[in-house]
Image (cartoon, rainbow, N blue to C red; front, side, top):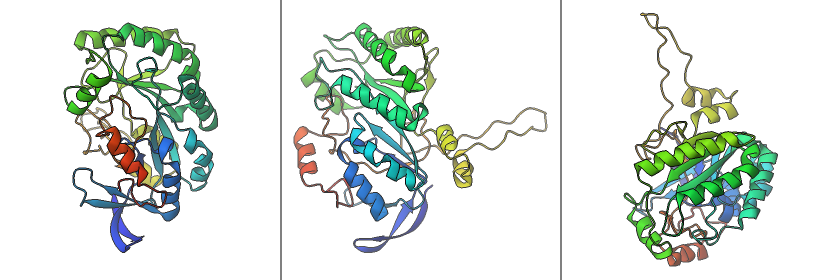
Length: 333
């Protein structure tokens, strides 16, 4: 669990939490649209997370103990000028960079052009190191006009350009069973949108492995929150305890909480298993993420992707963002 402490907020002294790892954010693209807000909250020392399903539930989140921030983005360009300032605060970070190619289909209407996003990916990697820029192709789907063959061709072309600038490619298949909102949105924008079936997933994984092996710089391949175990493909941990410990190798508190202790020999002479890092119980069962606190909010991402589960409607997003300022304690106003 996160440490608790007293926070001096605008309303006075309140009880809050002080996580070691902050997620920014699964629920919205903070680097693309809320970089100034985020930096102002760092200056203030805290932010407020409001439960989207119960707006009376507020959590005050302090940055005082923060060692690592995991940024999720399709366009981190607006945050790049602030990275040196974040580093100067002693905070480590890495990026989950979603780089899809759905330009022709119009499924991501407000992301920059693909060429610009690839250029940003390369520039970010050159600045902070390729191990801290993780390529996500998420989600993978097929429609009447878009085959899995075509998606693999697009990934192959993108990988030729960016595989030297990352160490890992993470992908997941669109989930239309558990997210009715995704299904309804995709029906409006993509005729015949479907989840790949088990045979298609297996074939996709095998062919992606072949594509990857042909790149000059082959990547580690992993799926995100997928039940299937696919040959040559690992199960990803987006909030990655191993990477966190690597970034904070001299931080005893991080190593104690997120690291595995040295293996010990049992009485039978066998090496005992290392305990898993503290799992984030707030995520889906298939999710392998370690503990963090997400500070984002639904209805605040102006990419307006057709498959997004975090936006109720374009109107809701625009109304929320219209009322948001850099001075707001929370993204949900």
